[in-house]
Length: 304
Image 1 (cartoon, rainbow, N blue to C red):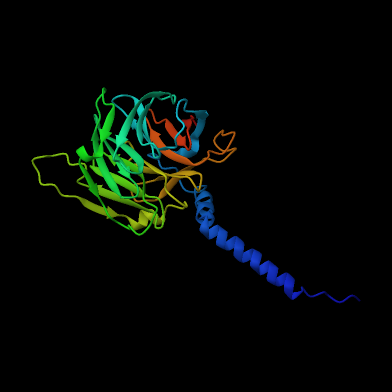
Image 2: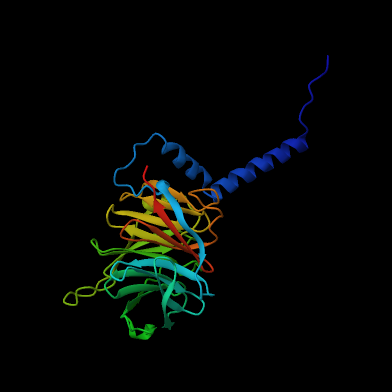
């Protein structure tokens, strides 16, 4: 009768190393939380107010933004002009795009530093971020504006977690609640709510209040934050993660509701979206994504 062969110590050591590596990688990439969300969503009832990102399919994929060589960062929809705006962070420019990704005009940004995000606030009013100095800069944009000088603009510096080199990467605005959401990329990954900027009522004193929501931030099972989008119809916030290749929808309590994967083979994508940096939604619920250096995507909701 043959005796059972005991596993060799070296094999057990290698097996332990592999298991530890897999567990560490899973925690680093937030794979366990993501897998749990995917499983739990199978038996949870669908939220009637949800944006339902899982029902979106790509309608325009990886279209090159012709005439643009610099890296684009961030995206916002202007419901008055019915156009999109993005910023470049090398040769700083504010660029207006059509809804099919064509350049309509380019506006030079002077003194804006490392501009990483832009957000529509109201007619002709936007906010642009300076990532490294953590500045929020309010700008006024007319149809004939050709350049903007930061020294002439209303601005504030939040000065939070200044020791980290990962600064402000995304903006979203709630016009009803007068809240400006500001995303810190990571280390730590946070979403701030800024109240009182931009200043709307000149008859009232200038007061800025900054808060964050640890519970909501803990529900973000992504590695970083690249862009934000607030949907006033549902009151839900969408967050774009470049490293996790994911768009996640959060309800008003910070609970994840749905996701849109930016990986090859998902939602009709032929290739993975490389380094997604900007997210916007128009009045019809269509989603627009830009990725570095200069690719443009459109996602549209399909009827279930």
